[in-house]
Image (cartoon, rainbow, N blue to C red; front, side, top):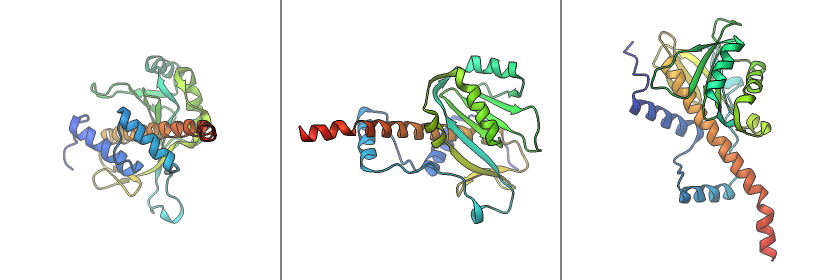
Length: 231
């Protein structure tokens, strides 16, 4: 097996995330300029949103046992300092070290094992959380735990509706994202890949929340447009 890539080689990191987002969310390009935002609003008015992509099931599942990655965006921001302190006080999760270049992210591992595969969570300062191999009940407990550390929390129903699900499994080949699944290396350190995929999912679910929020706003203003037509 070749050498592991640098954890945050800037070009590799950026390309991984851009490619992941384009493949997974179907986004070709987007802009935060005024013109770009106007175009986004026009596009949303012209079409219905595509539902969030869920994990494949049934006959589409591979023979190999898979784990699940689930991402939520529950707020505009998390208070990371207070969150890290409370995680330590709670004692259920061990905070893992990240490279110095990685900022505004907390990576934890569950201290109490349920099975051999570890349960890991990534908290991103922009209000997103990504679960690896974490049962749904535990996910909901963590989301409730996050509430005191949220700035401008989102509607809970919208948070649940806009989550991202992906399967992951292990392969003897290099790590990759293919056909809606994440493949990790069966023999090697996957820290870089798990972080990169988590960051991509965090960005993707955040974009989904923005899009859903914008669509709800447009729907709420529809009556104003109708009134103006008849005035």
